[in-house]
Structures are given as structure tokens and as C-alpha cells.
Amino acid sequence: MGKKDYTLLKVELEDRKARIQKVISDNEKEMKALSSSDVSDEADQATISTDAAIEQAITNKQLKELKEIDYALFKMENETYGICEMCEEPIGKERLKVKPQAKFCIVCREIVEKTS
Image 1 (cartoon, rainbow, N blue to C red):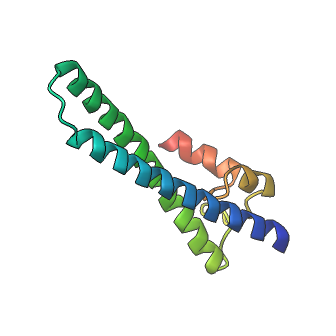
Image 2: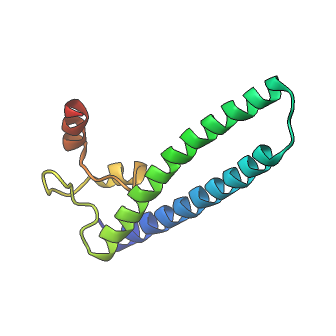
């Protein structure tokens, strides 16, 4: 992988990280506002409760992605980025373009998914 590709992937990871952090922050503010609102109707309370559960599930998924991004950025700093953690072969450039925080090459990812 060339230096230009590497730099573009790093910028993409950093941009994605910033977007996720903003979404999480906005969701937290929205949920605090909803939970502090004085709602007496049971239907409204149920809606707020359902919305909170959905937002929590989305936030959990985004927090997982943030960890993956942070790990990829860590690997970039340590010059181990783009190497499959299972077979230790380079991860294809096309795969990294699709998922820059990928830990495994396509073949090893399929193995991991089958054993999970």
C-alpha cells in the first residue's frame, strides 16, 4: 500500500471517528431532554422508553466501531496497520478501502465468522 493510500485511509478513519463521536453526543443530549420531559401519558412514556432502547443499541454499535477505529489508528502509529491478525499477510487495499478498520483479510474474516 502506498503512502498516499495510507494517508487517505487515516484521514477517513479520523473523519469517521469524529462523525460517530458527534452522533453519540447528540443522541445523549436528545435522550436526556426526553427523559427530563414531564410526560404523564402512558403511550408517550412507552414511546420514550422504546426510543431510549433503540438509541442505546445504536450507541453501543457505534461505541464498538469507535474502538475498532481507535485500534486501527493505534496500529497505524505502530506500523502494523493493514496486516491480517490471523495469517499476518497484508490485507488487500480494496478491503481496507471498504472497511479501513479491518483486522483480517477476506479469507481469515470468513474463518472467524464461521467459528463465531
